[in-house]
Amino acid sequence: MLSFRNLSCVLALFLGGLVACSGPLVPSGPYAGLSRTYEPGSPSFDARVQPAVTGSRRGIRVDVSAPELSLVFRPADNQLIARLEWLIRLSSADGRQVLEEQTKRQDITRTSDSGPSLFRRIAHSVFLEIPPGKYTILIQVEDLMSGKMEEKVLRFDLPSRNQPLIATELLLDTKSDEPIIELAYPDTLNAGKAVFYLTGNVARPARLRFCVVRLRVDTTAAQSPYWQGPGSGFSGINPSELAVIDTLYSEDRIVRRGALRRIAFDFPRAQVGTYRAEIEIDDLQVEGESPAIHLDRYFLIRRASFPRLENVSELIPPLVYLADAPEWEALQDSLGTPSARRQFDSFWGRRMTDRTQASNMVRRYFSRVEEANLRYSDFKEGWKTDRGMVFVMLGEPLFVERNLESEIWYYSYSGDRGERTFVFHRVWRERAPDVVEEFLLDRSFEFERFWRGQVERWRRGIES
Image 1 (cartoon, rainbow, N blue to C red):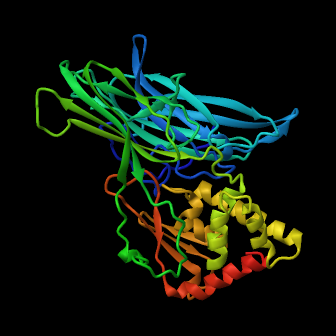
Image 2 (image 1 turned 120 degrees about the vertical axis):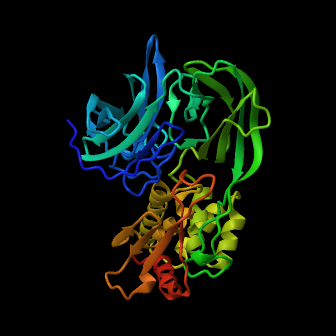
Image 3 (image 1 turned 60 degrees about the vertical axis):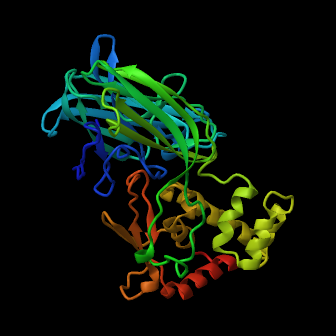
């Protein structure tokens, strides 16, 4: 059996249905069952709950998915093996009365020549037959190789057949009809369908509008901590909302509502970027009114190799934190040309004539870049974010203070070393307040001397 720890969660309702948390600092809402960051050895997972019908049985389906990359694999019989234990516990709304509990152990194998992937997922689903009402679902996943465990608490309201119109969250479904529940997907994804469920007691027709739009987001690398351009201090930051670039797909449809209907739309193949699927449901007998229901679902399409960097065109951009202006111009000009590898090698070899030393520093730098991608990605890759930049340059902080609005990273135990204390403020977007965790650094001239020193240490091959 899995061990349990005390829960300290913020629970809130979404569309009369689902909320969740995985700790006191994770915002609630439609994305609260999803993991925003991943850490090797810690079984981060995504979870969603949906109403379901199996034959004459009515209840809920709980889907849980963990990335292969977050698991610990051990050698066994010419292959690598990971071992998980899943627990799903259904309780009354107040969590006091346990109604049902299911556990399962699962072995996962892979060959030693295939690296772990963020997008190869280990999935587990259960159907729970329950009457209409409000419930609490505890989900725990334990990595039996590392001994680490993650948990989430979801709340779900299964409507009765005579309740007003209710729509569930939007999911992607593959052609095999298995839901894809995570936030980020590889650019090789062929989802096939976007699916949601409509339930309620109103039998007359309703108009559904479905579209998928691409959004404009900032994908530039973070500026240095002492940069003093427009809005460089947090008080001057006013994050722009996510503007629509173009519409990939749009469809209107008339549907007749019933006790529980599965609604599916075609979902287009998408390139790397940020997308939003939108659903509006109108009552045809009340023209001119606002939509009875409006649903948004955000999707992040990443490189299939993410978070890894696999070629020189992906290795050059993170050097923006180390290169001076002429070096950076030369590196940028070489992208996509045969000279890119030569420029990359020249950058690292210019001040480090010892090839072993240079190789070690390259390996150390880009391992941090890849780890920043896992830990700190938001709408852009993790190394480009403010937290990712500081992590790449300085590594793990000595300790971190967190609250709902900010994080403070300390790289010195001395309270008077301001240049080694970094304050990051959480960004809340009006339309997408909890899709990702966005933080902006409070920049200051005070960082300049210390930061320039760190850049020089990397360039000279001194351990940072």
